[in-house]
Image (cartoon, rainbow, N blue to C red; front, side):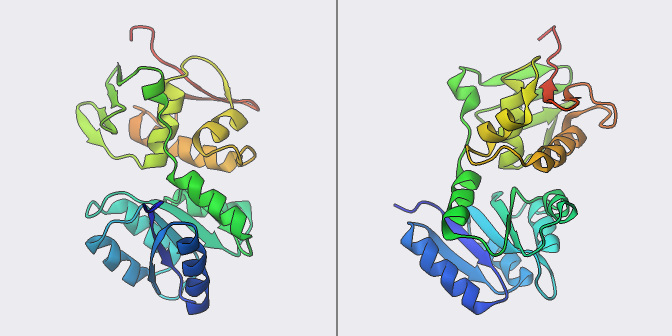
Length: 235
């Protein structure tokens, strides 16, 4: 049984060959694309659980490809891990802003990459564990089992990782959650210091569910501590 279907997007054939050997040996199905354009073609015609996407490619680069993946409704939403030699925080934020779920700096070890893949593919059944299937407050409705969010009656599209994060916050309402607690619950036990991940994902969620994202009502920042989801008392 396959552990997941992965599309590797890299313009260097030797990297794709190494990736194939590693991924197949660890139980994954692998397909490959040598460019962003080819990756988008493959995503239109096939299902993938995860895209490993090189950030620096000629033509349509990794950032443009990631934005196109997140903008399209022609395929099921895959997880995306960006691979790059750039290590600056600005580069990480740029990748996450483009829609990536995670970011791995080259050169990386095989155990590190496999751990990141497992984290990207894991789902967080938090609502099911707590016996919650649906939460509604003000003009927002969240159906955890259907993986659906409605704002003022209209569906809002969330990535799997955005839904995992929102689920964790909503099912732990009205208390301060530390950066480390959220990261380890949603991304996995190997995370904890990637505060920029939360800044980007919280901002993305605010734009999707808050009436005024610049003045959030629900997704509140607790300076130097973490975040708190304010669930209105009438729920």
